[in-house]
Length: 495
Image 1 (tube, rainbow, N blue to C red):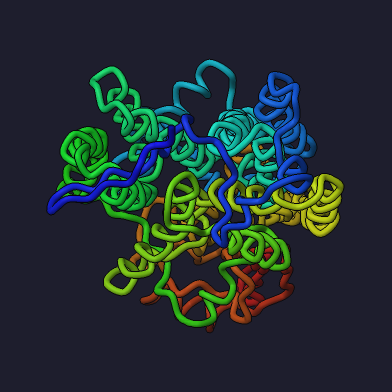
Image 2: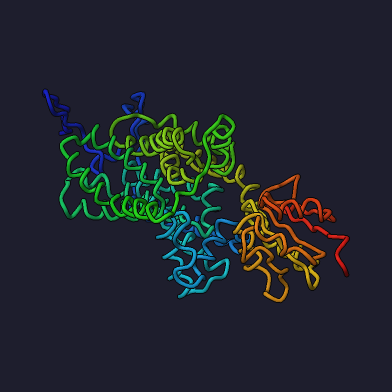
């Protein structure tokens, strides 16, 4: 007999949200069908094979898409910061920067010591995390709905270009994505029977989530809503587990900011930034529209789908509210919500005839194919860092100097140009406004700035900037993707 819904003055007991009830729920009551229509929606008879496929197929697909061309794009500036932290003498480059990245950089130091610091080696942890996340997405959907739904959810998730991109980046977003799926995997059993044995793995997943990416702790707001709505009696125990899990990240933020570190700013969400979010989050705006459209058919705020509904909707709203006070809005910070959208889309798709189970993923793959191909280009991740090094290295002459518009641009040259082919870093030992004399006698000067700039001269200020503008002329400018490279020449200097 199904559990009945009972309510008194203080408590409402609702049906289980865990694996005990695995029907695909229909928000309009269409799941109460009979006869041939009911039989058409039953899961396949051989569920063991489907359950195996639900985690194995997405993991293989995500891993394959991530491996192909993973070493082709050069490290972009954020990844170069990872390389610098992983290879610099201890503890250089760890304090004073973005404090939320310290745990990830420590992990990458250990990884680089064991496996090397090549571009591909630095990206392998992200690749492994995405493959594991894809497996968990499929298993989660199979447990929550049906095995076939798990296969669909995992495949949809693995096909997203943004998932592939962050599988190929030496940044913590992929690890935070895995931690978010892991925490959500542990949530239903912990709420059904909130014992220490079930709450401890959940708290551990929250620890991993916060240390990988503090913004991803917004997932706890979504989890809290689910607990209050469906397991109110377990709220205290869940809150204790969530608070203990978030404590390391909170302590890191507090101590880091006190020591002079900072949280890397992003942006405030204006209309243009919000309009660009679906394309940046899903990899292609059309893919975002398709998934959002499908997910609308799976957004009931009750029972099984409620966890994914809250996971998909609550963190973006929370980040939007926080961004009104401090500039933290970034679509990449919401990468951990993609599994929820994939599961909701798969739940809606599993209600239609089986032939659409193949047609829709194939259509999604075709829509995302151009973006997938573009990811493997030299500037496929937004910045053609290797091309910058090739431009400078091929044209550099003895005696050339360099001025960098960003500390990570200096790291770019150190990463991709041998020491004997680098121009002299004129401002490395002194601030720009106090080192105008460093430029005297240097006839050719290389300027490297992130972004597509109309003015190649960096705003270093003081006498140095005045000398760059009045004492040099711009001989040539290149615009590799994501950068501006200029060669400045002082015609007055002696040859």
